[in-house]
Length: 64
Image (tube, rainbow, N blue to C red; front, side):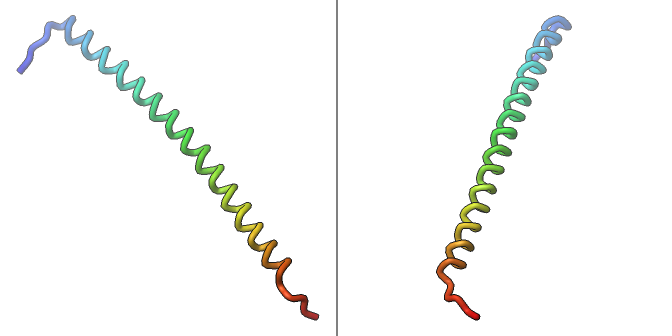
């Protein structure tokens, strides 16, 4: 096992904490980006669906 002095251990743990906090921030940013892309995709899917419904209604034979 590797042994550290108290000061070395504190420095190492603080470095690891900062790295973990940076990774957490990066992961949260990635999640926000993905949420935005999911929303955009859902809106586009709804528009395509609605356009398909409109096209079918326009091309359907008129019945009385």
